[in-house]
Image 1 (tube, rainbow, N blue to C red):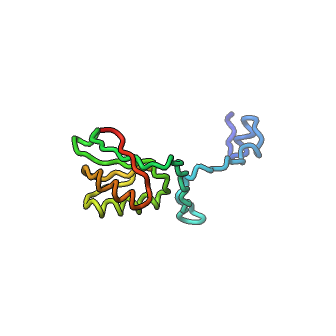
Image 2 (cartoon, rainbow, N blue to C red):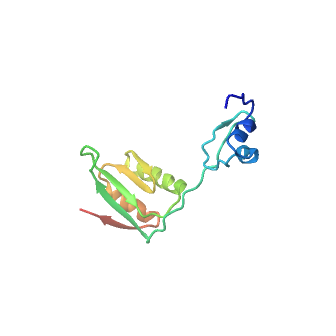
Image 3 (cartoon, rainbow, N blue to C red):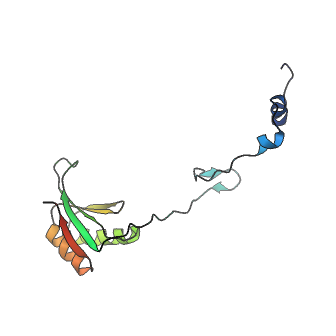
Length: 133
């Protein structure tokens, strides 16, 4: 194979492949492309995660594991979308006067303010259950 190959089709013919098989590229559907020289920056639409159905009870739990002894109150089972969870978390943080965050479908509020959180959730129309000690 000492002859010089000048193109991709010559290389494909040298290995016994058809040029049409080589030139077909698989379609890339995994949304990893972020920039193209043809069109510039590529913006992907955000896919809304499906909301896990709830059983009608907001579960309020106090946790310290993995937080160096600092206690947080976690609220699960609300059955709200991401925007609804963030709005509710903002309301709870403001009511409690503490920080907090939304991770997945769980709202975490810093400190042990379970009674205040229970009152706020009940005013928002949720049934509340305390889980754990």
